[in-house]
Image 1 (tube, helix red, strand yellow):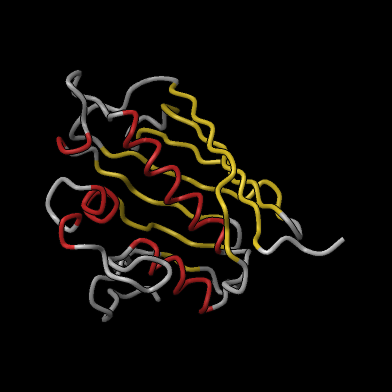
Image 2: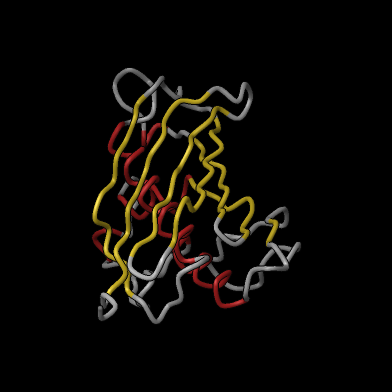
Length: 179
């Protein structure tokens, strides 16, 4: 899929790298997660489909760079809409992006037949990402089994590769397998 997507509202750019090992279904789920449509197929309500809202945060600032089984990499633009009074990325925005990237990463290894329940999201704020910079957001599946998936997400400044935030997410698969 090295070319610009012809699908409306696609999160892919002409530079998006999609592993040949990844199924088309998994790639489509990740694209869907980063586009205007929620994972379960409903449009965002109009009151949240406005500039500077949560949906604008995830759609307007985050672009998929590459997708591989168990790995998702994105470029995050730190725009004023997701910045705090100190002109760095707002902590809530860090959490929102970490959640979105973690879900997308988990979906590369967990089929759509299983629902994911976010049981834990841990954040470490190591430094600050200044406004008007770009951050590379890398998500990796640490462990994935029958009942849960654990994902680690690193946020690094694009220019210096300095680590600014980290996140760990634990997802429970629903329904839980019978014992």
